[in-house]
Length: 424
Image (cartoon, rainbow, N blue to C red; front, side):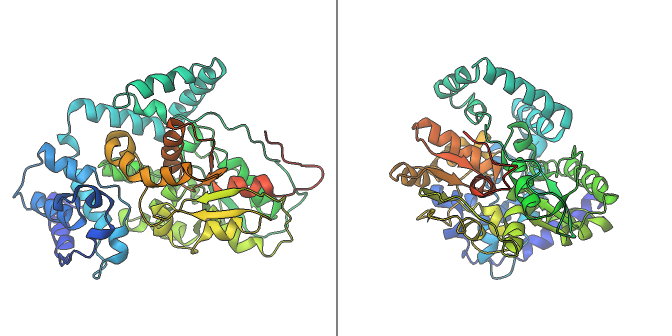
């Protein structure tokens, strides 16, 4: 591990790469709202440099400027010098993390611990199921609506998904690749349908799915929240958990995890990290790559479906317009993209919980567009974005189903006669 002095020099050298051209400003979500240079990529780079040169102290205002970045990385896509913005931002948050107010640190630490520990996830999941069975979750949402700033997290709690997918749609295995699925921690808690849907689709394509007791978090939220030491430990444990599995392909269900896993060799000097990344993809890209080799049939879906492409999907960059290519095989489907498709929805990991004003502002155009349409579905491959959309749509009682693209693909896929899909 680097000493403090060498780490400072490394970060200062990274900030030196920025030529302060300002090409990133029109692409920055927070700058588009505030028009404040400190809320722009080059402004944050200057702040991080000043912190590491001890020219500035981590004041509450400075900390907010760093924390309010949604880490969409749109700035990197237009940067003429390919700046290491993620590395610089992580360093700034890591430096200022302990300067937050005690209550703020306690809330964030509890949230991250809940998401990253399997035992905590199981406990919360049981509580949520009990609350739903007793219909207590409806009261949670009422309280959250009355006290949005303090109880915002309650408004994000989705109702349990009732969709059921066949567990063994095909007999036997027709593909040589052994696939392991990486489920998101939040999806695991909230019974997200992406995991059973992905299993059903991969089995229909003839892949063997390796059963993994995945108790390890990929470390994405810790890394983005300024807990870099904890993130490195989680990454180490994550890599170790896959070492002896002899898998051919590691498939992420959510793009947030996928984008972070692709950064592993940069964050951790671990020989297996690079090997893991080389064999890693996301579920939509993987299915698009292999579905043309199979004679799949689908039920028609004569309804409008909005496609949201999260910022993390662009960071992965495996296949362009991957959701459109995945869902276009469904007969009669009407796919729509947002007019401001390139704009961030504002979820930003846990930003929507701690910087809700910006998050709500950034998503508003998309919510208005959906509300003014007759869309039946909104698909997004990021669990954080999905929860953010669902909470906003619930406020206006919009009857739009929010789900992962693989859910809709699995829902319309015609399976063998002995394994029909059951859904409400």
